[in-house]
Length: 295
Image (tube, rainbow, N blue to C red; front, side, top):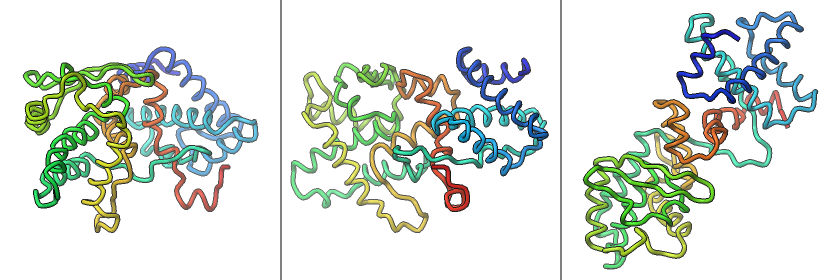
């Protein structure tokens, strides 16, 4: 493994421990190529699939193979950036994780923005009661936290009014059993709705006082879903809050290094963030599912 490849990963926020694991994966693939008289930099898509088959024949579990392929993909990203290869064929490989639900569609930043804007601009006549009109102001704030900060229902449940700093445009997200605490930036179009909500509802301690946060968020996403039905001409749809969070994290990964995204998402382990980076490896394309099943 060259020093340049190590420097490439350090620049992208990988720890020494992760780099060592990646080295083992890449070395395993390199040795397989040598044993099969394959020039690594000229590896074809079908040859990469043959490597996966050989790993499965060795009894390697799908989850471990996904990690191997992700490490090899990173190596090919480095080779592509250095000009050694012209395309990264590893990115085309998709492996399904058995027993694990896969997000079928990832929403782009623009699509997420469209969801928020259509929700915040919902006509008043859509609110049939005064209570519904008032709750909509709260729901706008919550949907914004899902779309821009990628919060979970457990995190919204722990938010307190003191965690909001409107003058600095920041929000502190406390830790939960599954996530670390962090401080994130609020978007400009979140400031006024949050300010209005706090002034009107005057929550004492918790920002959103309710016992069933998961149900509340489910209803909010369902409302947003009605504004974007499945038969849209541009072929995207809202599924659930998990899809929104996954989309937010995957979009972050396109503009930030992995350690930054780990912090922003509140992940306790870098592996949790890695799973989003290798999301493309978890959903088989129809072609691969039909002609190269890996079950």
